[in-house]
Image (cartoon, rainbow, N blue to C red; front, side, top):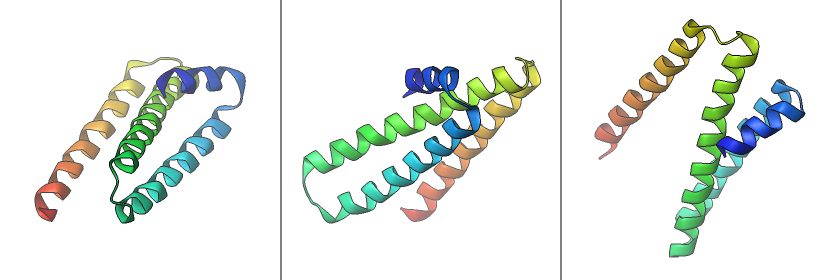
Length: 99
């Protein structure tokens, strides 16, 4: 996921890569809902693979975006990491509430 994000960002426009990353994330979400209905181990492994692919694609895309658009300024990377940290905390809170 991360390698393909950097490769695509070099070949086509950043906005198109971002849109494709979000579409892929939505498809992965739909696959998750479908895999909940299929009680097979291959469905769980397939969905886990696509979640890893899409999330690392999106994470790498954000780093490429910081490098290209903001010229590699440290502030852009700091904000990027703060967003990741806040989303991780919110995810953990959601897990605690739902369990």
